[in-house]
Image (cartoon, rainbow, N blue to C red; front, side):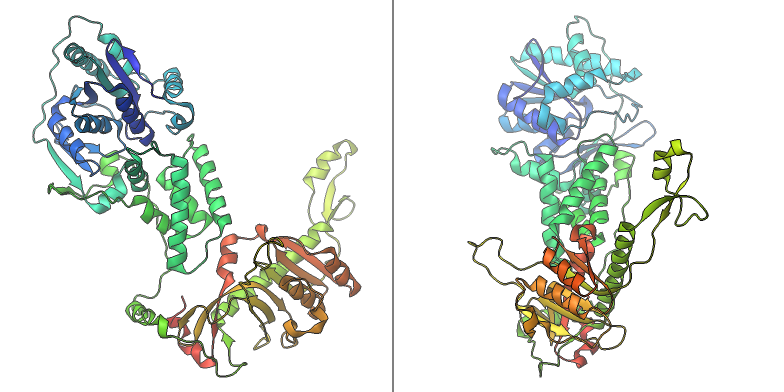
Length: 601
């Protein structure tokens, strides 16, 4: 449903410049009212250039003029600006179009605080405009001359045409329509402008300076004239993050967790709310991508968000390389620190990858396969982190607050002290006796079981094996993962994915747990790893990381041997870190370690 402020045969659409939702309202109003002419709030001195720019849409144009100090003035023509959308609709519909604003000198750069235009998608333009009027800004000295000039031109058009569609900023609509009641209007001259020209922008400049960045503008253009019009900005943002995640996985080789998408959407929503907006701007979108995933993902989001495929310049206009600061007077910088392969060897790497189809993973003997040492270091450090976290959690479970007597113990407990304030006593924290050390760590990424009995089950992680530590600083490991034959990335080098793994300390003690008859009663591969972790642990604690806790049987089983299972929900750990750890590489011989770094990065 469209909304206009009507005065006789003049129908005004109150707008905020350079916003997609406002441009959509203009198009809907044009299609509903079917006016005989369109008048827009653009200086009359740039009429020819503005009509030319509107005819070039969806290509980007910029109209350039100069003030008395010879400083450039820019008018950016893009699909999501409602004024140029109005001119475009008129040209497409074969109707007359006019720029009726007065060109004034020294008009201030006003950053008006307006409600987020996304609200129009939910409450409509009428309610949005009513809210704006309650908090409308004050006028500046040049506004009266501009408004009375537009009123004169509007009255002239209303006498020539049966139905006039007027597109103007919200701050001026009411005043202009009221001034059309006048009979005599002063003849105010335009500011003198020389050398007005129309140009276009370079590709890099388009990425930086478009008011509605490329992703929004191109989807607005794609939805224009379809049943899906107008597009929903929130859905476009979700699609942007999803498409970027696909590119991120393809280019980095790291899987993208849906929890990261959820976190990014929640983060960016809260970030927007802190600035008084409903939807985020591009800087906030990129900041959320960088903070919730990493710099490589943020770069993929930036590249997708700022790509604008409709820039063609078929009429050969001069190209300007403007920055956001030159065009809008303000900008923010965001730097990406990307993880990329070495510059000197990139050509060799690309040449090797073209022959991936001919590569094979053929270990000469069952015990010839080995791991990639840098990944071993990372996984062992992660195991140490889990051991500390598990011990800390158990210590916090046993902590208690006691009245202060002779020692501050582990520090003052502020909450308990306030709660017992009437007792006039100071309470302190006491963690008590250390709970012991961790002997085994189990991490389950995917249990690899059917979700229900009716589902046809395809086993994804069919490779089950046990590795012994090569030295005293490595643990024994049992795991299940994807087959090494599925993704060969180099000669004798295979990329695999963990479904789950067990690390037990000290090394060189573990038999092949997958063939051990003691674990035949276990229902899943995850339970095999947990039971083996309890059996092989020489310390009393076992850390178990998974999406759901183990069966109570395993806690009882551990208690029989004087041990305790500490469950850590997978959601408490960084999903980005977990997804990176999930990928590992297998080599078909120790000699492959000399060349592995050329294919793994």
